[in-house]
Length: 182
Image (cartoon, rainbow, N blue to C red; front, side, top):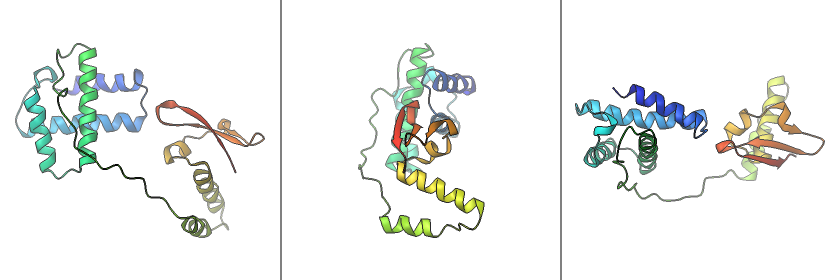
């Protein structure tokens, strides 16, 4: 019942919002979780039939599943995006997620590795094989340039400017930045 809406939503996320494949899949999983709830509760409703009380029951359901506050907040974000799309495409006349508040989250700084830990990792790489040399180059590039894994694996040869001493990185939201390379 929701498949045509999901398909259109996916196209909107890719074409209009220019989200990465990982982000698109995350949003679709969030909508999938909501449709899973509707099936579990035998609620045969289209997106336009969903009311605030349905969304509240869904949030109670995912809370009972033991999902963390972070996961719940991400799912709410996915639902909000879906209903933003539905409003723009005139699939619904109102947004049932408009009055929903996400769970409070602690904002913690990410864990980082100490310099000694980085040195231990690099020292553990077997440089006697071509794969070891490659792995060391990959790891040192990621570490010295402060790259996310996705940014690292999408680097192209054309993004490397050795003579100038920098790398062009395409980050989240297709934002470009230039990073000095060691």
